[in-house]
Image (cartoon, rainbow, N blue to C red; front, top):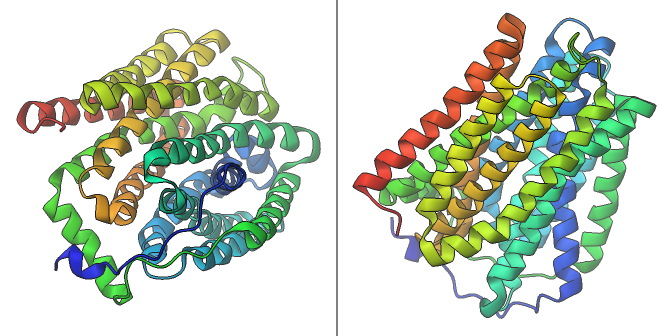
Length: 398
């Protein structure tokens, strides 16, 4: 099936003003932060709901996000994107309220899946920014929105750690519900209406994802490489609260959240990585980013105190974000008229790997504590680096 048959003639898009760009950036950050609030609060939630089920919450949230990427993000090509975003944002506020009121671990896991599905609205916001932007400034516009998203990933943990330390984990989910409702109202007042890109049926739209993977093997390769790095990233953030609360450090969820501030330095790598990728090609940056993630887990294994955790997380976030921007720059150039669906494939694979990383990190902690976690954490980026180097030799990035 030709992707050309999926396209319809676009209508002129409204201008993307600086104010609207900022609104989109904040909205993307609020959406994606909901996925990560649970990570620094795991210790607090586990004490409130003993039995082990709480350990599944990070994996459930990321699996829900991957499901939303697969099933909902392609709808932005078929339905007016504003409607899809508003519907998902409203559902996100309800899901966060459900998590705040969950009576037990089972309900919390179910609510976490719903939070993840609805939070995939973040990946509707980025293509909307690209649609609205002047082609000459599209990179800057998407970069600003991505910066908001990255801030949400990292600072959401800081906020959750502080709120849960003072007011409890239910208060954080309640606050998240309120922020989601507030940004939904702002979006309802500010988001313009843009024409959909296709009028084909939903089944054919999903089927075109398979066509894209078959047509562009490099898309799956880049997605798997980034998935390995994101899996290693998820291993660390899933077990961090337990590591800090353990007998070696005796620190609480507030300190776990503060590690998000350290990771904000990774956001600074995004524009630099994009600049280098534009001039030297993405393969060098992806390779360096992968090597940084391997090095970060080496630091975690050798320097087991608080200083080692701080240094390691700085290197970890720099590596993951640099590789992410470079891999995105590469895959978006594979087929410009299918960027939305390419984004679906790339992000879906990445977050599925992230969910597996969260699960593997939790199991490793239960069976072998920090040593086992470090072993899992270092194997994943080594696998990603191996895939990258093997593919570069046979099929260089172009």
